Amino acid sequence: MASPGAGKTSVIENTVRRLANELHIGMINGDIATSLDAERAQNAGAQAVQINTGGNCHLEANMLREALKQMDLARVDLLIVENVGNLVCPAGWKLGTHRNVLVASIPEGDDKPHKYPGMYRGVQAMIVNKIDLLPYIDFRMEFFQTGVEMLNPGLQTFPLSCRTGEGFDIWLDWLCAARAEYLTAQG
Ligand SMILES: Nc1nc2c(ncn2[C@@H]2O[C@H](COP(=O)(O)OP(=O)(O)OP(=O)(O)O)[C@@H](O)[C@H]2O)c(=O)[nH]1
Ligand SMILES: [Mg+2]
Ligand SMILES: [Zn+2]
Image 1: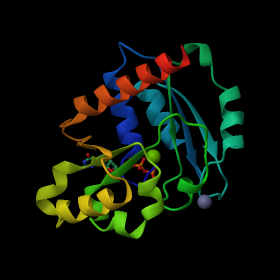
Image 2: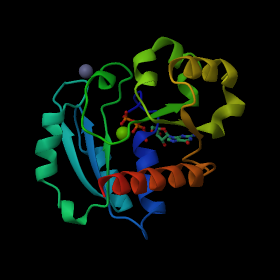
Image 3: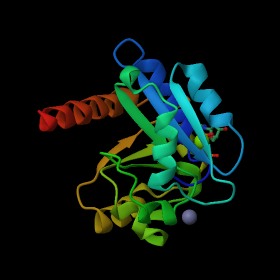
């Protein structure tokens, strides 16, 4: 989940490319219109299914159920769901995902956790994308982190840049560890 343009698809593309030798990744993408993001994920090597919500501003679990029918799940080791760009209602709809990740980004401003608390409360990890833009934007990291800490103390946070690749390895370590943890819990 993230606001429009924070870099959800960019994070997914880079994740798929970097894990290509280890995991078959599936991607379900929700957008109001177009299949642009599913095509980007496919070009990166993912098996991708697009959901067009036709105006709905968030995904719902029944939409995912239909999308899953179009996917060869025997060939999926990790499924990533990209929600509609929106910091409000995606937080209120449970999709059945095992981990929820928020992609925050530098250009959207340091006040977002203060203004969109629901989104920051309900996630297990947060990427702070576009750190390559820090020199150009007045982003008070401490003010941002204070808001996050109030809502979600100790939240796993991964500052990174899809543009330069900085910070990506630590995010991938967390992702692979979360997958292993889930599989172990399933026995
Ligand atoms: N400078 C910079 N630009 C980035 C970075 N990551 C993504 N972008 C750019 O940000 C724009 C939006 O990226 P997307 O990955 O399409 O964002 P999104 O969250 O999937 O957008 P929606 O699906 O439309 O909500 C694109 O022009 C990307 O090239 C980054 O780390 N640094
Ligand atoms: Mg996208
Ligand atoms: Zn909505």
